[in-house]
Length: 193
Image 1 (cartoon, rainbow, N blue to C red):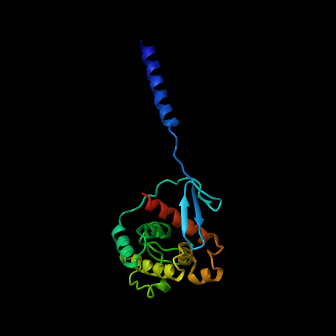
Image 2: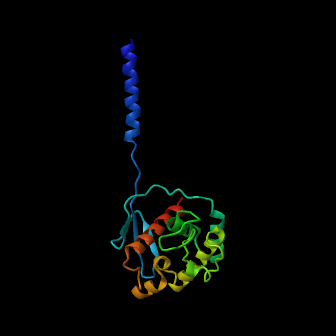
Image 3: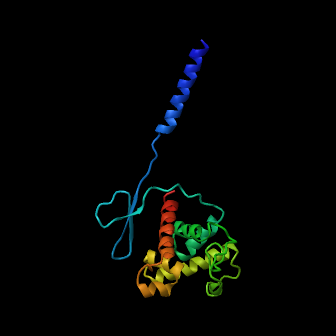
């Protein structure tokens, strides 16, 4: 009797274990195509060879902080920028750390360089509202400068607009290319969450 009960318990444990192991993991590759107007097209089912693999598999969902959502929404409304895009930039720039300082000296949530604080009307770089509004103001000017071409505006935010002007494309710097990809990845995730 005891042996039969033990066999049943072991059998049930094996069945439960099988359920956890047998559950398939859902993954979806994301493909990107940038048309001649600079418009980005994302899909998980490319319809032509012009699409290139952008994200190999769906990454774990980002853990967005909602702490700054009100300020991000205000900046989004004020400057006509996507809420999800601004949030993605903040995620990549500072990982939502309002006291962040980069190796190059960039400050706050949107990583503003000290020499640009006055130009972006930022009095206190560690104040979330001041920093986000100033960073959004600057990014809006880059969007306008690069005629709405988001990859170029993002590259300019990272490397500087004169570098992007020089190459007339995303510069061939790994840091800048990675930056554009990361922001677009989080933009996609926030937009679809």
